[in-house]
Image (cartoon, rainbow, N blue to C red; front, side, top):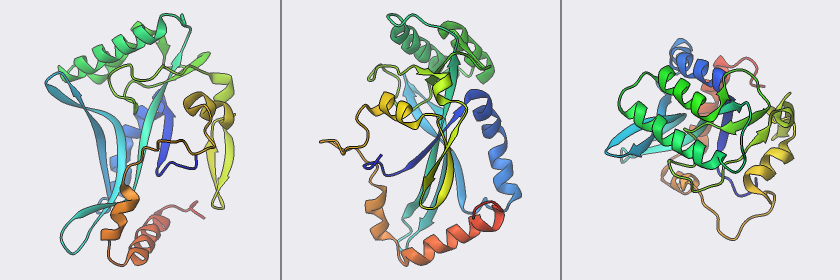
Length: 226
């Protein structure tokens, strides 16, 4: 996607839940807790603020004490969907999404709130015919975008893609996935939304040395990096 300025990872719900359970312990275990910050995207719901999808950031401070993002990644859950009525799913999904967020705001146990949502939308923790973005995803609380329902057999088994001489796992049919999300995804649109992260790099002193430092810290603990 030529106009995007960050990296995102999607995980099936069962893997996402496990990741959320272990990531801070893994960061601590490998001595990266001084550079990697684990957080969650906050969502406003009624008069409350709740956590949604998980995010990892590497921050640095410049001479003025300004905290600047060096790198970051958002991680989104995806859910299996057993079957659905295409004329009713959007309303059912967004109603269930709102109820889920309100339940979390009321301090309901995550697994209980998740089960209620799955029952409402006919979702499954186990493999099913369809896949949909998790309710915590990037689109917020309201139905600003039409829900995208994806065929599981077009996403799995995963494929591999090459980027900057590295190999990454990707949907089985990346074109199918990207077209469903963006439609014409390989041309820069008239209006481009971005995160303003690259612009802030001008506030960093010794940018190359900083990037080399953080990359080397990660390489030290990731034996498969190369």
